[in-house]
Image: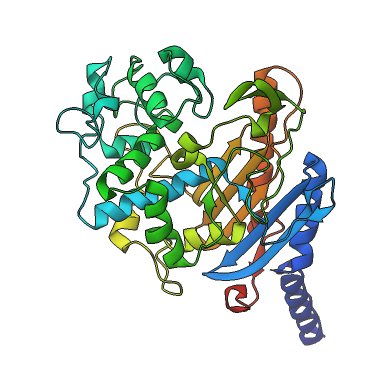
Length: 404
């Protein structure tokens, strides 16, 4: 009798283990993404997922164009906003690896990397202490203003509109720092604007051309391109962006025109800080090119990747170089006005997830209320990692990268 009972208990235990083990299925991800889309009333979103360097999932939900009922597909291109900082950081680290740059190089001043007329009028002497590493790790006390893409700098300098890279650079250099370099963390698009200019200066070509030729095309990321400002300029297969609250602004190139907020900005000075369009599949390719695994060739050496994922010394910050590094892995999110939301995540279990949306969900109300909604939306995106969808532990052996 004891043998029978023991046998039954063994069978029950085995069945419980099987029932608790969650196998990756497209249906599980589809359901989670549909629920996420519906909760936040997102017109269209695209998702890609990799495990151990293999692309195991790619799908689109909703519409790229709601009026003409054009569906989102894995080939649909989206603005990725600040996720593009990772691209710029990889470009910088490539130059470091090639010996053309040192992370401790001074950026400004007579012997700095940027020493032309645009950078000659500096209001705060502490700016001369800024290094490439400070820019990458966001450890500079620029005032908390987010104006790149708008005309604020042009108005302040009494320059013609639209405000470009030079106007934005001159404007921020005319401001006093709120803390010295390396003393604290403060996220700023200006840091990555200057990094883009460093790439241009060292390579003697537009930094986007360098990135496309030396970073994106070598890893097969052919659907990643600089973003354009207007609806009419959008690329083939690029989605339309929708303002959640239907907000409008004067057009950066002609302020007499009032346009949807997501089409009001000048993207030219925003490229290096967050002005790329891409697909989640291309975003995954980029992260797999710096993950240190052997199954896909990396664009950077292992010691460079280790350096790139290091956080600042002496201050409390999780921001490394073009990404946040936490105990569970790496990630970067991007929100651009109310028309774009994106994220890429790499976990320590070698799960890679990328999501792009053609709106940024928020609510009507104060800026604080809107910000809280954006944070909640971001947290919900992070929860779409498979391990958080019931503890998925088994993944298919397929690799969609190899499927024509």
